[in-house]
Amino acid sequence: MPRPHPDTVSAVLARGRLGIPAVVFFVVAAAAPLTAVAGGATTGYAVTGVLGIPLAYLVVAAVLALFAVGYVAMSRRIVNAGAFYTYVTRGLGRPAGVAAAMVALVAYNSMQIGLYGVFGAVLSGFLNDRFGMDTTWWLCAVIACAVIAVLGLLRIDLNGKVLAVLLVAECAIALVYDAVMVARPVNGLGVNFDTLAPVNLIGPGIGAALVTGIAGFVGFEGTTVFAEETKDPKRTVPRATYIAVAVTGLLYGLSAWAMSVATGPDQIVAAAQTEGTDLIFNLVSPHLTSSLVTLGRWLFITSLFAALLSFHHTVARYAFALGRERVLPAALGRTSRRTGAPKAGSMLQTVLALVVLVGYVLADADPIVHLFFWLTSLGALGVLILMTVTSVAVVAFFGRTVHRDGPWRTAVAPFLSALALGAILVVTVGQFDALLGVEPTNPLRWWFPAGYAVAALVGLGWAFALWSSKPDVYRAIGLGADSAAAPLRTPDSVRMPV
Image (cartoon, rainbow, N blue to C red):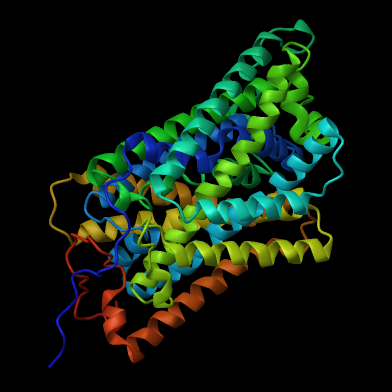
């Protein structure tokens, strides 16, 4: 006699510890506003040569706000730390869900580990210049990894308080810098809006510019990852998601444009290529006290640390969700009895980061270009893939679910989101060489995107292996601890497991 379809899986994270502000702090900290401005925007200008970086941030914010409509509609029905993995499972079936999970693990690990490159380089440079300390980027990165390993095992609400202080401070200093740069246009010629002209997003490099913009937002979608630990998931997750998109979009667009005002639109690319992550600090230093510039540099470093910590939590919770459902080893689904943190997933992410860092040190690779920019660009591409597929999954899910959410939330907005994100994805993959800063004939331009095809195929193969060898595990895929959605169903004509 067949066993009944499981409704939930027992393991849970710590409940009721996060409100709307704490979730916003986590996801905006992952986006790392000062990092996106001082590191992402300047590197985007320098590598792509595209003037439209400020407009790219605003366009991406609008597209992600559209994506969020269907995304948060799903969050009201499904509470699961697996986020993209769970939503794709509920909408498109279990094999597609496991494939999405593998893509998510690659994407978020790439984002988290890639940030160690710029963190180590910036901190070591600051310590060497400011205090005369002879240190290396990798030593700073390894120390940060050790500290994050400890914080990853503590109570989630304590981590939220740390991120709150850092985030408020870095947003405040970014706005001060923006005001100074806009008030001091190059050569006193007046404020110029050329970098906001739509023509700057037409032609070669547009894909690179848009994925640079998306990289700055990666983390906002993590509101659902923390849903199980919120006090009121149906209210907290939607509000936190919209707030995160609005805050980051406006701040990024404003800051990237302000830098072009201070340098002149015709000089912003050359200035970014010459000065790199020091550009924003060099632009404001003649007009501010040295203490405010130094404070900004410290907050840039803490912004990077906050992003590292936030992405660490995201990866650990994805691993937890998969371990809880035994898609990955069950040990990953265990939480700390004292803090409720997903300790096994957290420790695994730390070990993986250390292994990659050792590999980069042995290869003597550039921590900014090869670790930071390449890996975070790879991570952004993966999240773009996941958002595109999730938009389709939202339409499919609500198409066969009884609901009262209305067509805009459940069909129109997610359909338009899928079209917009799909278009950006196609352009991005086609122009990935510009994003990596390599020649069009360089095989790396295809190897990076192909890595996600491999991850998805591994996920599909593993899902079918579970279907044939562990049917109980297969039936529990995507259910989580509090899934209120109906069991997965598919038409009788479909002859594949879902």
